[in-house]
Image 1 (cartoon, rainbow, N blue to C red):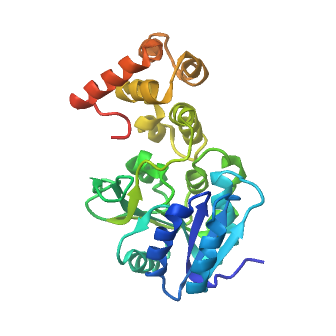
Image 2 (cartoon, helix red, strand yellow):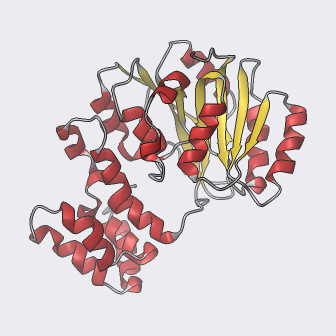
Image 3 (cartoon, rainbow, N blue to C red):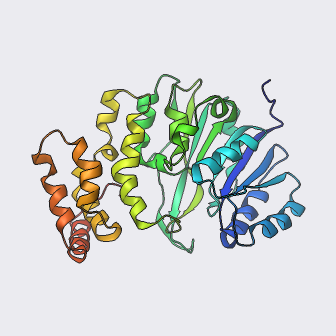
Length: 322
């Protein structure tokens, strides 16, 4: 039997050892939450004082529901579990260290009156302390954009790498539950896999106005993870999606080895080497000549790669995610 929604919007937060950030996030959610909202927190077996912190907030907001996993199940499973436990018609997959901007929930609830399958909101990128704006808009749209159910290619191509963030995604829960999620566990992008594995049953909307302050520099992954993410996880994920071959071919994030500044950054900061080249780049090349630059970058001393990366930025040779 299909579960009937008990509210319009579930704020689904997946967390792990972020008690020093989670309180500020909850302050901003609770101050805006209406009677048509609930908060679901799925905790990946934190070892800090997350449980005690949330208990205090639950006394302030009686629609906050906390679930602690017995073990750390990974980011993708944790978000999926939060959606499973939710009872709202829509689920906002929210990061545990970002801040809602004023009136964000009101704006989202207004948009959800259109019976969407997917809603994506823009973000303002800030530094780690949240005191300085690094980039006013994560998604470079001047106005809202709507997408019909048959416009999956257009939606994906126009968003591309901005889909990497999970905290600005609001998805219809019934669609999420009906789709295959387990195949995307460990990808870091379970939300992308769920959304784009098939055509959306309804329309999608991207809100151009930034509704979130996104905190840069608080990722918990190891450095080597970024190299695998750029060169393997993301391209492999996109290959599996229900997108046309022509749409995939237009995505610059599908060919990061063609972007020299990005390769220099991966070499200098993340340790990209010949091992990663042989594993993830060489199998995707159509000619041996195409591997020349990736091999040369992999052989550079890391200090030199860093210097060349800074020079490339100064010359406006933008890296992949600029």
